[in-house]
Amino acid sequence: MKFNVKCLLVAFGIAFLPLKISAQANMVDKYPIIPFEYKAAYVDQISEYVSGVVKSMSGQYFGQVTPAGEIYGYGSFFADSDGEVYGLYRNGNLAFGIKKGTQIAKVGTNDHYIAYDLSTGNPLYIMKYNEKINVTKEIKDKNKFLVLLYPNGDKYVGETLNNERHGYGLYFYTNGDFYYGEYKNNKQCGYGALFRQKNSNIIIQCWE
Image (cartoon, rainbow, N blue to C red; front, top):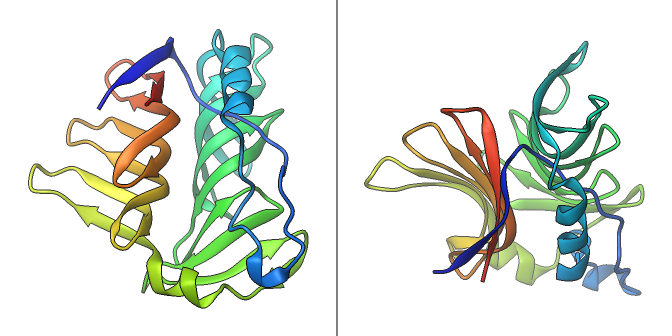
């Protein structure tokens, strides 16, 4: 597997708008499909933002911040209301990512996401602009949100297709580092971020 290091040792987040709307409810996407060019442009924008910690009454953020100290880029947020939140941030708000509570995981944007039952891993519904949509039989049969454990102690937490890493997920290494990004066919795909434990920064990578 090859990857290009797009941005060296920066720190977390990204933001995108919904880009695709399906005309039929039963054909709705799980979450917005973000073109590679949009992701590349965003990474170019945030490439110089360094890592930082921002505390608020609702929780604590660790990730990329602007020179003015605003949350913007790849990051992780531990909130009282949403639990663990990983992904891409813009102007202080989650733009796209994973919200992992105690019972439900949501993957997507705040307005368009798929919800999973953490006790079973099964998809529950798709929320799109305040409309709750039932998932199709195909999504129910093939897609889950799972915890996969590996012999070396590593762990994957995220979306799967036929029990393989596929969609958005988190890969936790035994040394404390973790990776957030997209997977296809059990491999890292496109842009993602490696959160490094030792020096509290991140490497943004592009996997081919």
